[in-house]
Image (cartoon, rainbow over all chains, first blue to last red; front, side, top):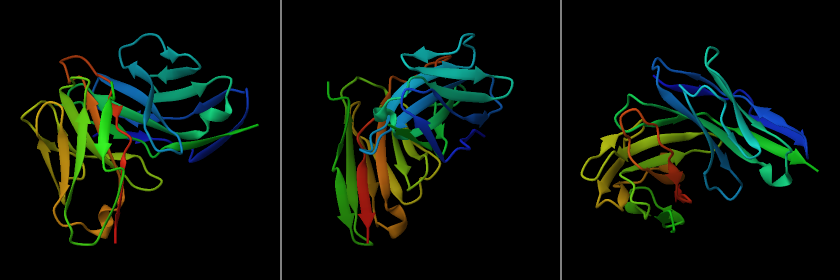
Length: 116
Length: 116
């Protein structure tokens, strides 16, 4: 069964600094994808970044990068040069390729607060 | 493109009442999903539809029914609402689970449901 663990309920970072949000996962499948979503206080879920299990390079999208360590089953999100608008809840999710519809499993989230 | 739209945005029900949450997507996606998000937690899958004409149970289907009306629309029905169903409900869609691929889910803005 899929499982996602986000061990940091809350994180603080100073504006313009980098921050790492932790995510570990558990799966018996060899083929899967890992996602990060941002949920601001307004409530919508915004897709940030995706990493495939067979991707050799870490994914990057602008200020977001994913530190993927397959052997340790971790997929940490790194946000560089934090901005006040980055304050939000962040969710890590996983989907296995072998399921019929690629059902996602979500972690419980990390609340990030960016301090001015 | 509106992406994924949901109606209503907010609803208050009394215990035992019924209602239908509507979801539509204009991205020509094959797969659609319904999730619930309880306070301080990640999303949990209620039902999904891998393609038009098919629906399957997710992690927490009890108390809900779904209808994939056509390729664009996927509705969630609560036949007899209970206070335990107070939650935020998200609809999502994705291109479709292709063999060997993991595709991104795109979310609607959510429906906040309060059952008294």
